[in-house]
Picture 1 (cartoon, rainbow, N blue to C red):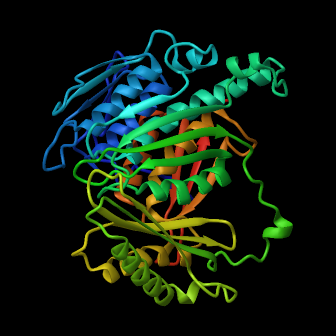
Picture 2 (tube, rainbow, N blue to C red; picture 1 turned 180 degrees about the horizontal axis):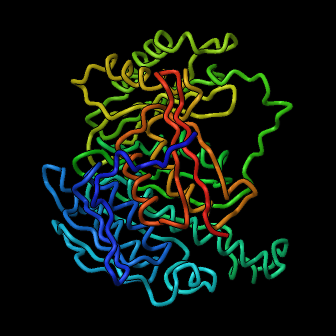
Amino acid sequence: TMAAAGEPSSPEGLVSASPSGELTVDGSLMEGGGQILRTSGALAAIWDRRLRVVRIRGKRSKPGLRPQHLRGLEFVRDFSGGAMAGLEAGSTEVAFIPSEDAFLGQAERSESGVWIEEHLLDVKTAGACTLLLQTALPLVVASLVVAKRRARRAGEAEEKSKQRRKLFPSAQRLCLKGGTDVPHAPLVDYVALVLAPNLERLFGLHLAVDVRRRGFFPKGGGEVRVGVELRSPRRPDPATDAGKDRKVIRRCEIRVVSGHKKISQGQTRALAKVAEETVRADLEAFLHPDISQVGVTMAHDSKSLSPGLAFLVVVETCDGRTLGAGETLNAKSDWAEAVGAACAELRAPLRAGALDNHMQDQLLVLMALFAKLGHDEGAATRTVPVASPLTLHAQTCVALINQMLRGEVALTVQEGEGEAGASLIQCKSLKG
């Protein structure tokens, strides 16, 4: 049986409600960092919840809002048409008041700041573009779902006129500026090569990621454009999927990127060679017999404002899952050790037939969103296998969803046993 997720690991007081209905989230509990802001902000905006977050990033060495979190919350405010107090660098408390006109209603009527040609989110530091995307994506997707729903109700789902494209858009565009490949955040290539195919497979959500300039620490200055479009999810075919070994890798790719004139292309090639040798040795037991070589792609961006190196190992399994692991490096890093650690991260979800650790928290808000708003036949109840145990980020996200959306959406988790056991996360809509 599935136990209610988040209850044992959710300290009392993570989310509390006042008699007026305002929700207060303690930003020092559980993950105690930016994940709480990203998740609670998106949930409050989409579900029109009055929200106050206190003791922001209370577990970090420098608590309070950093530029990256500030810009993300500004987007939440502007996109949803709500109001927000406390938006300044270093602030340890913010309050969000949703618009008197429900956000989803605004999206259906093409009002407010929802429908513009391109949404710009510029951190102006090396703050992670990929974490900005985690804040913005649920709101953008919600707008697309309700636009599609309205188009269906109006009987215009097949209408291709210019008027329909204007009133009922099927895509949104984001321009993210900041750090593309920085520590403590997903690499932008993880978004393009791992997150994107999984979102399309699970939800029919298509991300087109275009990296215009790499941004490394400390100057950042990277630029990424992301197109977001709703498509039809891939339906599993029991006839063709039966018997596919979910633990076998059918495609393996290493992505090595570098930037700035201080990093030579020779260093990029050297890292690629080390990565290929390490991946071949460490993941050999999982490679399909037909794989004769591990693919390697390299990219050097001389326009980058700061020198940097990064790698990503991407594998696709025979049952269609895409997994990835990687990190940023420098010339003094032990490259073989870093790539070996990435391979070790991949072995557990490969054995379990699950998604990787980095994917866990990036799926949960979208699972709740699609469960509530629909989009495809399987949206109301969906189960996804992830590696065990759940990361603290994922546990925090589960607890926030269950407590902020109590009575509307429920996430439950069945914990896997041992390294080879996947945890099953189920999301279910509790209201029609």
